[in-house]
Image (cartoon, rainbow, N blue to C red):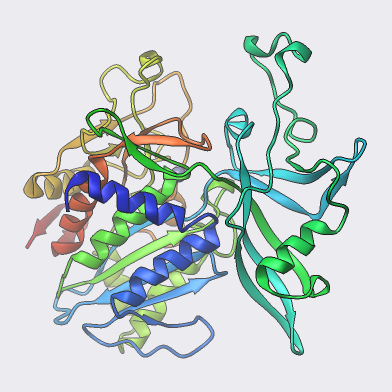
Length: 439
Ligand code: ZN
């Protein structure tokens, strides 16, 4: 498959993943097709050498693992990325009546989005709905595959200063328009119920988020670009999944972790700060018939690649990037480093990752924040508070992070897969922070 085709598959992967719940559903479809066994957290686990497994927490975080056939070098080689993206969440009482006959939705921000990128475009909703069923309630996935909302700009004639910079008030400026008079209060849940084929009275609760309906695409006269909603961080979910499924390492336990809630701080029961990864590794260890001592030794020899997209140099604002440690589109994966350790990368983990990429022929770039600018945070250093392992922060370079429509390099998707396939496919033998060898 060539580079452009790989990015086209990425676009389709994202189209199928309009909410974090759908991202997990899409990941599961790939894993199921590869013959993986689904183990629920509430049941006993049987885990065998050579087996491929996954578990899910909250329907929005997923951890998959493959146990090496030989398992002669017992440790974990892990990639972590996140399933969520910045958007707006529909409040419990969804509708705002008026002014006049208008019906709007009441929404609040989820994460740090660029507000203006959500205006004047067809929107939909997706997420999960709890439906009354029999003598209980059941979770159902919902993706309304149609245009039903729009947040209209204020005309320039009514806001003459808009082009001088405008601070949006999310309570006032960002309420999506749902109807101009045809619909009435209660019709939002009627719409949800109709899509699920249930009675509106049986819609008990919902976690629904706004969805940008603009489809992703590969574009440019030279097909250099891929643009889509949610490249941060579904591009990393996609490349780590593809690499995880393609690589075959008979020696270790390979782990794929996709966490929810990175955009709101990760401190939830299913986020990178939760016990999800620790619990999973502990249970895999036990199911393999091993004890605490084995687990401690395995973790000490393990390695995590934290995968979250990186900022490419902006074509109109190159001054926002560091002069030397800057990333370019289509120049390969980015190793991110920060002295404050918001990125986990250090000389040891950088050396391991850079060496794996060199051996695989994948170009590597370096990113560091400008020293006078605070950068973002990501998964690795948070996950490390629960499972402390050698870790490196990587990502693919992109523009317009947290816009409702982001842009990356079409060739970098394949570079990302190649880099992580090299990681998963190599038995990385770590000895403290003293040395690492590859076989
Ligand atoms: Zn991210």
